[in-house]
Image 1 (spheres, rainbow over the protein chains, first blue to last red):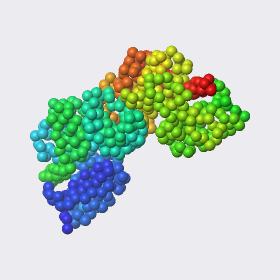
Image 2 (image 1 turned 90 degrees about the horizontal axis):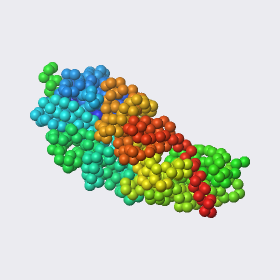
Image 3 (image 1 turned 60 degrees about the vertical axis):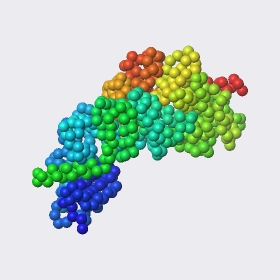
Image 4 (image 1 turned 45 degrees about the vertical axis):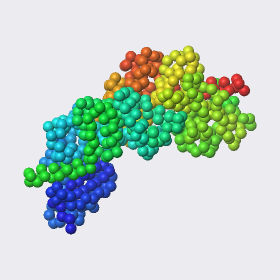
Length: 300
Length: 300
């Protein structure tokens, strides 16, 4: 019988992941597709109980959650802490009301920035996990994904951050625009990616003019779906790198994300002469949630 | 009883428009929503007959059609004529097989370009209509819409052209990305448009980094949907203008399209010091189809 002394929860838009924890040790972990995007406010507690109820005994158990669960359209809105600041402050977590009082739910705050306006929910916990393991890091973290976050870290704090919608734009253009006829779900060709990324990184004006030519090249020259996917991905990532240049030039960059996508960013950054390294981000959320749990325990 | 001596057809992705013509005089016009996008190849002749059958007598009638009806996924694939060339050559029209032999259907060719790869179907007929009325024009035509075409015209020929997916990207981002929560179908605010368009036009790196901040500004600062729509539209049009600069700087530009959208392009081009004028494009397709009919008649 699994009896955690706390429960870690990573609750994003599309996925819910939970871990039964004893200190920093994982007793068991589970996941479901009951992400924030598919739930109304009253659906969160049942979705959580579906996964954790048999972990609960007679006593209340702290549940530390991060991610879009704290969005305005989530369970309850958790606050945004304005940068510059440390990535985590579990004492400012938001406590949703629950029917099953064995659940002591803490939803961690996100981060905000006023100029340019930006917000994050969930990545701050990954950053805290990274800093727990690399407390002296000075440089930039790049977290590719649906929304790629570039995070400037100094003295253990998030100095500033910038979000790019590159992954979401790729998905929309490849599957729903006229380019769906050319690309669809094809796997990006690496060489086409590298060439297009380099071109768009060095010439920010290229990307908007080079999108429709992907369709035309398929019609006129037999560009394959994989080549089209590689070029589209390269154009979008390259134009992101052009815009993000002050964040990676002459700085140490650590790329944290899914291995395939991280490799694409790493390749183009290295090609541009950046000091960029990849790191598997899989364990960082849990490390951040563990740091939050430990801070809460210390103060209780 | 209407008995045209030819029938003009503008058959795009979403609309079918037909005119009963006597020479260059319109006897009657009709439209339906049976665009190319909603039809399989065998559906085109019935969709056309739905609109024109009572215009047909005993004799065959020439039907001159332009647009996506000639795409690979249309009625039959019409050829692309490689630029530089005149916008129209009705003798190279494609003749689909018909069951009702009173229909003598001619689908006009589109235009293609090899470097950068590009294609058009339908706009070439508008350009022909424009040149029928302005035979000495030297400069650039800008045709905003779902896909904006920039067309360099010289000596009565299309020298080159460039397609931007700006309208389609605006629709996807405002209605289907995370920005739908901020923008949706809101009408773009003109002042926000002008400011964002100017910024993105002068700094091509701005656009990719300025999209997610629209969502954040709505969350943090109460940016309204109309302001968000104006800024998004301005960022996208401005980055198009940055990329298209060689096509409009120090050239005469005529903007042909729907009045509201044309006005946005005209405003930002004029602000940048360009010699840009708007023109209502509503009648140009018919003028181009009429020029094609007249050329066909002369040679028959």
